[in-house]
Each structure stands twice: as structure tokens, then as C-alpha cells.
Image (cartoon, one colour):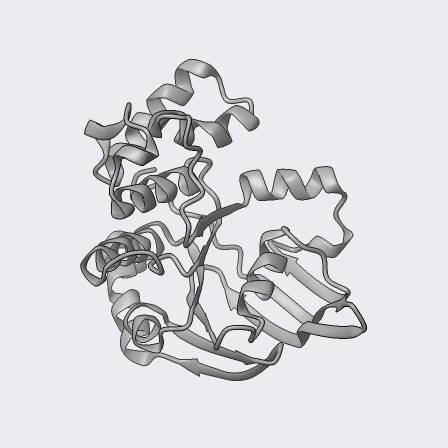
Amino acid sequence: MSSTDRVPHNGHPAIHAEQLRRHYRMGETLIRAVDGVTLKVNAGEFVALLGSSGSGKSSVLNLIAGLDRPTSGSVIVQERDLAQLSREELASYRLHTVGMVFQSFNLIASMTLAENVELPMRFAEVDRRERASLAREALARVGLQARMNHRPSELSGGEQQRAALARALINRPQLLLADEPTGNLDSHTGTEIMNMVREFNQQLGMTVVMVTHERALAERYAQRLIFLADGKLVGDESNPAVAAATATDYAGADGERR
């Protein structure tokens, strides 16, 4: 994906959750993982979801990703209510609209990096010859062109996370969802990964929602900080310094927006 392949903005929120709830039972106890969350994320925003363990931030991300269904309420992404989609429609949504990056990388150990990156394209039935070319391009973008034929066990944690980023972006998703993407990395490598995520947001106009428990990390990269506790939204703060820098970079990447 080049800097000219920007994600289109249509004036609608990229994500709109309304009174979103996800409750489940554990024995006799009702767990209110998400309990009435209402929020909007605009197209092209970089938003961080913050909170302690058990606050509901990863549960909200899973609902946005279509990995889980709400107990009640709605989560509308790109004008589609995920709660109303069939299993097949949700699978297509996850394949084409969303890219996900996890703390644990989730690469398939028996596959090379190129094969891992190609996997979403195989599910999308992209032609085999085109898959190979696009996988090489994606791995080159994250600096792994020389490691294409290596398996995950032969790579450092930072290299594995860069490969996971390449895989997440291979089908040109409109949303990048990142769940503690630096959690298993040292600070230097984590900075490298986050700089790449910021580049995708600023240069490509991609909407980013990142879950983290590190406020300092969120303040360095996110335009908005959304705080959760006990499944509820308890704070929503803009981050003017990052928002201003993003607006400047956005104008510089697209002459028509200066």
C-alpha cells in the first residue's frame, strides 16, 4: 500500500457504539465485561482505550472486531451494525475491513513469514501470483524482506510483531485494531512498532484503535484517550499535541489537504 492508497473518508464515524453491553455468567456470577458503553471514533483517528486489567477495554475491542457479539446495544462500523450480521458476513468483515495486531503476535509457527502474510489473501481468494508479490511488498514495508522465508521461531519478538503488522494490513483494511501491541517487547522495539502504526495512521488515513494500560504510550501516539473501568466509559480526553502533529503530517502527505 503506497501513500496514495489512502483509506477513503465518507464523513460518517468509522465506529459508533451505542449502549454497548457484553454480559456473561461465570457460575452464579454475572460478569458485566462491557456495561453500557457509548462512543464514536471518526475516520482516520488514532484512539487509545485505557484501563486496568478487567476494565473492559479488550472486550470492547473484540466487539469492534466482530470477534464477539454484544448482549445488547449496537456497534456500527462503516455504517454496518455488527450485531445484525450473519456469521458469514462477520467473517467477511474481519477479512476485508479490520486488521488486528495482538500482544502475542499469533503467527503460525509452521509457516514462513511470507506464508503467514499471504494467509488472509488466500481466504480472500486473491490470485496466487498476486499474493506472492503483495506479501513481498508488505514485508519490505516493515523491513523484513530479507526474512521472508524464515519461520517465526527464528525471529526476535520485534520482527514477529512487524510480520504481524504486515499480515494485518495485507488486505488494506479500513481499521487497525491493536491489543497491547508492545506488551511483549522491550521499550526500544516497542517504539519501533508504534512508529510504524503511527505511520499507517498518518500517511494512509487508517483508523487505529489501540488497547493499552500504559498512559504514557497512549499520550505519545493517540489523538484521543478513552478510559474504561468496570465495563463503563469513565473518561474521554483529546490529546491536542498529537492531534495537531497528525493534522500537519496529514496535510503534508496529501497536497490537496494543505
